[in-house]
Structure formats: structure tokens, C-alpha cells
Amino acid sequence: MISPTTTSALWGVMTLLQGGRLHQTIAASVALLAAQSAWDRAQSQSTRPILDAVRFEVTAVTDSAQYLLYEYRIVNPTSSRGGVAGLSVDLSAPLGTGLITLPFTGDLQRSDGGPHAPDHVPVGGIAPDRWKMMVVYYRAHLDWYAADFGVVTNGTGLPASADSAPPGGSKAGFGLRSSYLPGIRRFSAHPTYQSCCTQPNDRGEYPNPSFFPATGFTVAPTVRPQDMGLSVVQSDLQRVCGSLRWITDGAVCGSLRSKLKQATQALQRSDSKAVKGSLRAFLAELDARHGPGMPVSDNAYWLLKVNGEYLLAHM
Image 1 (tube, rainbow, N blue to C red):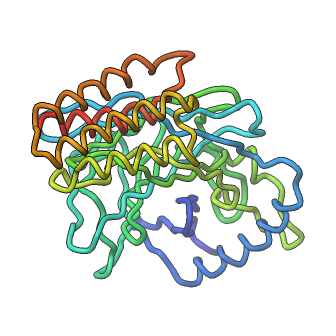
Image 2: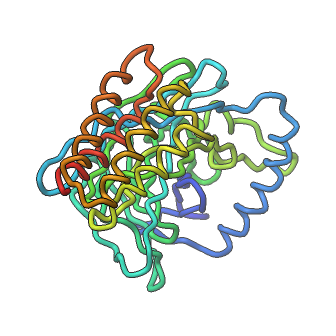
């Protein structure tokens, strides 16, 4: 008789938890990819995705003197057909950055990236109650996922996500710690088991929530402080006002661009007083245009504010 084996979805590779140790197997990965291909085809035939336009929003960034604390919430629109029970954020970094970890608060598990794990930014994490975290070293991501109940034992029974951000709702309590300044990062969100994965295919196989991602962009640690400059903020503003539409008013975008241009011109003249004056005006406009019903979203605000304040303090 086969001994009990608990199967858990860890967003992107099937991992078997046996005897308290994590074992990633090539066979499980191949099987997962094959199954995902079949379920991707099924999903493509659906008229509505399970998760739609999920947002992972920064709600605050504070400086603890040792690192920045990024706080987040999931926002799940009413157009979704299921709750969000998993998140994955890209935290990759250039070669040579290393694998530095800061304090974690909450239930943390670690994957084994092996000797060739890609570098990630210095990072620690915070998880809300009934959620877990995993540093996924082999792809330089941090994952959060809701704890499961009804776990699979010997192939019988179905798992279910114990918590989620429901359609039309939100979930707070997520966080990152890092010494790196914010940048624009990719993330993916994954649905609850019960909203995606209770029906088997013709071979009796059940899908994994990672087969049904909703992808997007958020703000997360990216830039070494010594690499921050006006050109970085200008590039971020271009994306925020362009494809991301995190600032929805073209006039506000134009005004912010103008203030950064003035700061750049003053820097070229070595006029530090004028640079600081333009940056203060830039930050004042962000403050005035951010809030409920205003055109500057939370993600745009914290991205531009934190980096703008850093430049002002170091000019």
C-alpha cells in the first residue's frame, strides 16, 4: 500500500512534501506541464476567465531606517468568477546581487534553487493569517498562497483554499521588506481550488490553480539606491501614464513630466537649488492628485513618491 503523500500546489511546479522535506522532481514537472497544456486549451474555450483584472496594490511604503516596508492588498473585481488564493511576484535582480534575505513574518517555506539559482533583490516577506509564503529560488519569485484544507491523501479527497480575496472584495496583510527602491514588477494571481479545480478531465486528472493565472503589474523592490536617478523616475512616469494607465488624467501626466524635465535641465546646469525646487513641486502635485476619486492610483503614487523623495534627500 502506498504511504500517504500530501500534494500541495506551489504555483508553477508540482512539489511533493514528504517527511517535512521539499522534493522537486523532474517527472512531476513534466506531468504538470502536460496537464497544464490540456487545461490551457480548456480555459481558452471559456468565454470568461476565472480571474479578471486582479490588482496587487501598494497601500504604503515606510522607511524603517534598515529597509523599506512595502504593504499590499489584493483587489479582485466583480468580473472575476472566483476568489484569489495565490500570488507570485518577480523579484529577480542582476547577476552578482546575491540571495540576501531579510526578516519574514508568517509561515515561510523555501524551495531549493540549487547552485545556479538566479539572483534576487534583498527581500523579506509578510503573510496574513491563514496564508503561507515561499521563496521560489529557481525563478527568483516570492509566492503567497492560502492554506489548504481537505488535502489530497492517497489520491482521494479534494483540496480547498481556506481563504481568498472574493470577487468584488479585497485582502490586505501582505508585505515585503527590502533595502531596494521601488520599480514596476510583474505578478500573477491564482484562483481558489474550489473555483477552478473540482472537475477532472477525461483521464481523471484534476487541474492546478496555477493553470489559470491572471497577470499584471505592481510596484515592488527593484532599484539599488545608488542607481536611482531622474532618468529612472522619468521612465517610470512614462509607463505609468502610458500602457499601465495608473494615472488616468493626461493633463496631470503632462504637468508631472514638465516638472521632471525642469529638474533634469537644472541638474545639467548644476543648479541644485532649482533641482530640489522642481522635485518638491513634483511631489506636491502627486500628493494633491492622489486619493479616492483622484487620477493618481496607489501604485503610481508610491512608486513615484518614494523615488522622488529619495532623489530630493540625496541631491
